[in-house]
Amino acid sequence: MRDNADGKAGVGSAVEPIAAAGAIGLAPRYAVRLALFFTALFIVAGTKLPYLPVWLQWRGLSTSEIALVVAAPLFLRIFAGPVIAMAADRWGNRRQAAILLAGLALAGALLLSVAEGFWLILAVTLLGALASMGLMPIAETFAMSGVRRGGLDYGRMRLWGSISFIAVGFAAGSAITIYGPGAIIALLVAGSVATFAVALVLPADPDASSPSGRRATIAAIGKAALVPRFLLFLLAAGAVQSSHAVFYTFGVIEWQRQGHSATWCATLWAVGVIAEIGVFAFSRSIAARLGAVGLLIAGAAAGVIRWAVMAFDPPLGMLLPLQALHGLTFGAAHLGALYFISAQVPPSEAATAQALYASVTAGIGMGLATLAAGPLYAGLGGQAYWLMAMLCIVGGLATVPLLRGRTGKP
Image 1 (cartoon, rainbow, N blue to C red):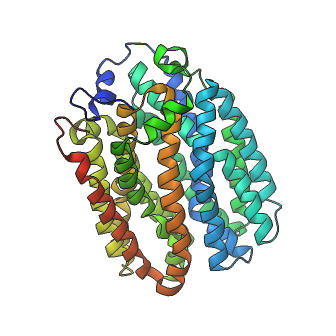
Image 2 (cartoon, rainbow, N blue to C red):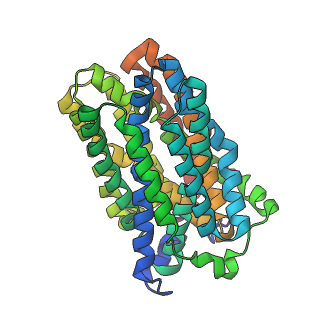
Image 3 (spheres, rainbow, N blue to C red):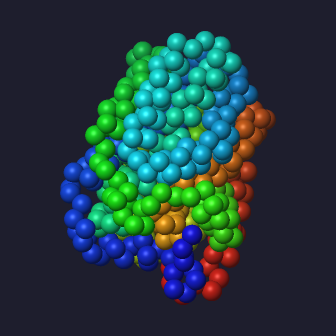
């Protein structure tokens, strides 16, 4: 890990190169290709995240089995995600790694379309997850390489993923209404095909040819991962992001229980993602104003409010503004994490650091929270959101040591 002059990691080191936009002169097509890659990745995510539990329920799985299928890939991510990303860093050719992973993810989606029974569905889900879990850290690493070395705007690339998430959410809602839950797998396969196609035309990694982009060593990666400040950051980011577990797993099912149509469920998801897009669209100025830790604090505070109110089974009119808080609970917290990593981690270890972040947030934290969400939701219903609010309190408290002694905006 690297620190600023005052010994504290700051968003400044990640934002300052942006002021010299075009200093290295990455071609505009670099940003376009990354935007397309995010778009394809989020076709898959926008189908799987809200609607895979609905498909699993349609296939006859119980509430506990649904929670296991959703949670198992998250636990696999704990170990497999960093290993895959480390291999990509060591290989020094992240583009080729993305192509291989996208091809395996497509194979997993095709196999899932014909899988029968809990155990086979679980096995095939793990196969697809093994491939896909390496793709997002690689995409984020490509994007932040463009920020550092070409003055590109991360948010302007990433927001296209959020837009595709909204679009596929509405498409999936309409498809379910017309064709039934079986349409979910067709969309998942289509997204996997698109991901593989775009991976084939990804640009070369600009860090690969730089002195700081040399291949990472296992010793350097291990040392970087154990820096106390980085561990505190992982705890804070992990708690805030894992607080979405009940919502991600049972949010649509709970809304349907309350009588909301598939169209309204898609609309509510869209409101959250539109708010997320707004944060990403102005990410440069927001990050410069709040700093990485400030973004994490904003996400934690919004999460306490969002989940505490959700526990009261609010009416549709209140669900709309609550969903808008997703721009902070996910968007701001995620931006804070990316800028924190960019400020502390050298390019040779960037994909691994991204994977460690994903391992904690979408692995350990989200996995445990999702596994607990099954029995919690079965026993408490919407009251399970109280536990998610408590996770945000933990995340907010974990940021306090990150604020101590800072002179900039870490």
